[in-house]
Length: 360
DNA sequence: TTCATTTGACCTCG
DNA sequence: CGAGGTCAAATGAA
Image (tube, rainbow, N blue to C red):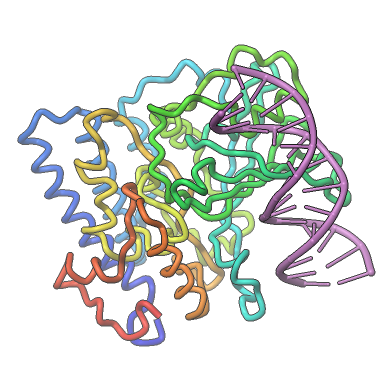
């Protein structure tokens, strides 16, 4: 950004490139017998891409309208669990790294965002578990001033797939039906829930503790499409904590983009760069034939800051270096293999990857 | 036997 | 130094 290219500009370019790439993908899809959903997904993403681009240009991107359109055209049937879904889920991206100078890289280099989920106690189904991933509880801690203990979860596939996503679940003091789920890092695992037995996910465990009558849903594994719908339905960026005047005009939260985020790499989400490559997660190969409707979800890769626009969630070179290091150490990440920047260079020769400081 | 959870101890950070 | 976060041995469930 200090090299002549602001992040907005880079993002804009990125979105345009992405839109073109997606359009190409769509063309391919149209000539095949791909599922309607796959095509719609591509369309949605194309629209989202251009919406974002327009937003960046200062035009009214109409992200909200876009989002509604996406929902309206998605054609995804209401899942049975929708009734039980959390009636309200607010997402807000925590401002982070604003005082990055003396932060611990190990903990704070990871992207972090919080999701608040209200639980329908009657149904016994907690909202937070609808994130489509398998979590393993690794700790619980009483928090000072908090009525309920905080639970710590990490990805089940941490060891097997080097997935370092974690989350914390904190029940609200005031409203026991409200959970605050803080995610840290996004998934690099290739978990596609088909072959995975449905372990009770995190909040279900809490539910066990707090409600013993949730037998109906204990076995309910969140299906990716359900997760998608859940996101579409509940996705709301809580901008209260953001500087609205600065961020509202530039921030768009296309619901269909989530699928391709992963891990510590999220900072290099399609929003940023390497569309042609990392977007492979959304390429036809990503949308696997086995689970054509499967979408990976990782709530939010976009980070806002008070200066407006979308910014990379890192401020220091060392942090980025660490992220990249983490990326390369992630051995198998079919969802979004960020072997970038190496591969990102080769995928789009027209993209100015040689921008000084782009990857530093 | 394997895997997830529990929980006290230890570590990190402010 | 205290609070929050993580580790890892013990325990339990399937």
